[in-house]
Image (cartoon, rainbow, N blue to C red; front, side):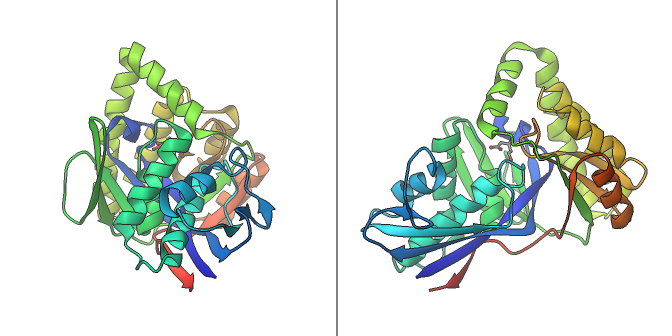
Length: 310
Ligand code: MEV
């Protein structure tokens, strides 16, 4: 049995705009998915026969990283699916890593990130490698169209290219507010593409999000929580203008106003989760719960993919 685990993520700045090649800043969180590979008489998931439509990411991971005799894949997850916290990326990264490790390969993060992005792209359609690279590397990942210091790897697709960089994560405290509304990333990404193809204001919003990311990197390094909070709130408004908000997300963001530096939706939007940067975890947790969300207190900057047993 070979078992690997990898973390979920929260996007601090830059979701959606990153699909257009703009920068993004994502942080690994302390919710993980683990995937174990064992020999089996048929391809199966958690002991049940594998079905492509039900196990899209795992089945695509098999095509991308296995090519061997039948196996069973057992998965266990701390991350609610469709919550915007990177469950698809973490299941893909942990499966790809476990399959490569089961073939006797050493864990090469760049190879895992490349193959995992290929899987996500195949299943999701239009996508960026932000989630899969963050789940692979862990800590903080700055995605940018140009190469900068602390470079990790580069992923290209057609005319678009994303350079991944390690980012140190200072001890910032976030509380996630999960709406309980399951959102599927692919259609939301398509919706933003249609808007960007037809509307100048949408293209401007995407450009501004790209600037916010770089300002946010500076504020993160300076540990300037007030600036970070203001940028988060601005980023949230821009995502709303791109049509990926949801009234439940707005209610949670508004509820955190008093107790946090700022708040925004995280991930694809359309439901899923928001995040608030705070020094007062108790008050923020209470505010999210009272506004109808599920508060999840997360630690950021956690380790990336790892082999748990072999
Ligand atoms: C989803 O977590 C992030 C998006 O930017 C999509 C992507 O980068 O593939 C919405």
